[in-house]
Figure (spheres, rainbow, N blue to C red):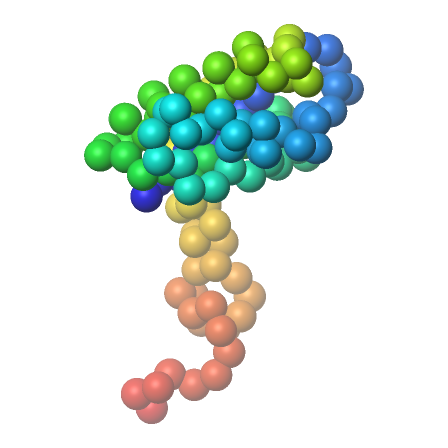
Length: 119
């Protein structure tokens, strides 16, 4: 399973992503292959993001199918007309883990308090 993010660009400044956007996209997903879940992140910067969880044989296939699904939704769902797909790709989680490693929770590399189990 892959998580692919699709950033959507608004047709005009200050335009909000419709609250039902994830449901609209999920409703179209069956024809694009197995899609497990779609979530919307309307406050993401610089553009709102759809998170699409799908089964695919490769990352490239997952990205292509997600882009195709989103482009289709932007054409077929009236509430999404005028929006465009800005970028599609797997999100990087490395920055999150790097922050955990340098967190003020103790020694570098520890993300919880307490003694080392071996001592």
